[in-house]
Image (cartoon, rainbow, N blue to C red):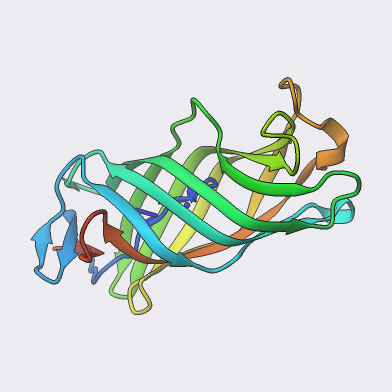
Length: 216
């Protein structure tokens, strides 16, 4: 699902993360695996093999830019009357740079104890929509050993799935800094911003079967 047809969300994934297959107006949707096609099993894990870079723009505070994004999600059910449900189980952002004053971001990952939900819906023959809810990502400061960080959340992240390119794109997702946890760097992290990332080549983990969302 990958931030899906996963984000992650992301975040995140990302942070999470899915590519949608052919879809048409109907009452039944299902994740399929290609080549095949075969039904995607409930409990199966989805991941992305590549991605665009991810950018969090925090206005006058600066930006965080990460070159590599990887996410996984677990499908809650193989088919539904209206959508596919999944949970973002992991997302990582690496090779990060930033323009924030004072602090230096090293990497980011799904905040411990969080399980963002993902809903995937086919809306046309060219793809569909993906919504990630309550994604929270913790970005660690270089040299702190994970003890210092900036944490960000997106209450609702709406993404677009494009079948022809097998991508899931999140554009201009509203993100807010989460303040107060021990180790968080407060005002140095900024207050709010806008997040962008595109996850590519969504596959069933352990195979090279790509994911599609079909509506019949």
